[in-house]
Length: 328
Image 1: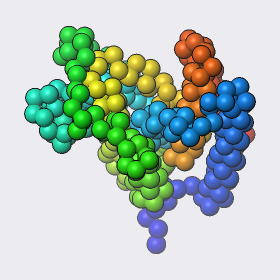
Image 2 (image 1 turned 90 degrees about the horizontal axis):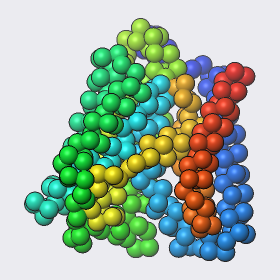
Image 3 (image 1 turned 60 degrees about the vertical axis):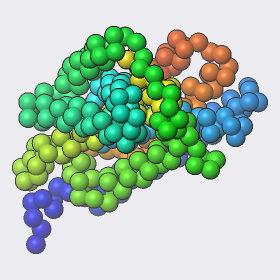
Image 4 (image 1 turned 180 degrees about the horizontal axis):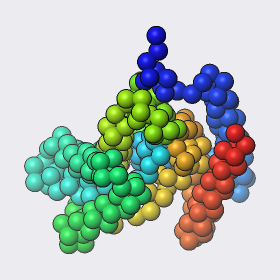
């Protein structure tokens, strides 16, 4: 006998199959665009399609991809988190501060991740219990913790040049950079969490119809809090990696980071209306943005034009999503 909870764990077989087919078609389309872009940049610049540059692209997008995994979950439930750039910077500052005081890599990483947990939990709690839209709640925390970062540092970076710490962002395991390995682990965990667990089913149900999910007996507030907390942790992890890569915790780090993360998620097919999306799609979206950024850098195209391109990509992705939803 089915319970009420069982009835909201997912859409009907037909609609679920149709959604899967749409996601697969969009994924194939994105892959085709990615191949075309790589081919075009290779023709325009021979240095683009080299092993070193391809690995550089993957390493560059690793921090965006790590946070984009949990941002995908947040957007699927119908929320959004604008504070990830500030969390990245503040966590990096705390991690660098702890390391300069203790010399312990484990303590510095733990401190940075703890900051992410606390900020993420706060975002989720305010959104769920305070009934405040995630956009407003995270906009506030973005401003607060960006300011805290400047207050704590006085506007100056906190240098961390010890090889033990710097290796987190610049080290290798064999030929593979450590940030890429961390990214791969987070991607696999995110895919498993969304596709193979009860939590993942509840995430999609919540994004599809919050009221029905609440009436079914699922603790909607808990799902929201967990989603935002996970996002805080991944933003903090990205902050620690960036701090190690730069050799310093910088209050200005992560400016525009939230835009890169959200762009990758939306381009990857996750709907801003909630209820649909995938980690695989997000990975393709992030790689697409990374290739565009790298290609324009190699061609010496101004960052101002790059910002314009990102904005246009978001508009096109949202428009395509709107048309898709209207046709359903």
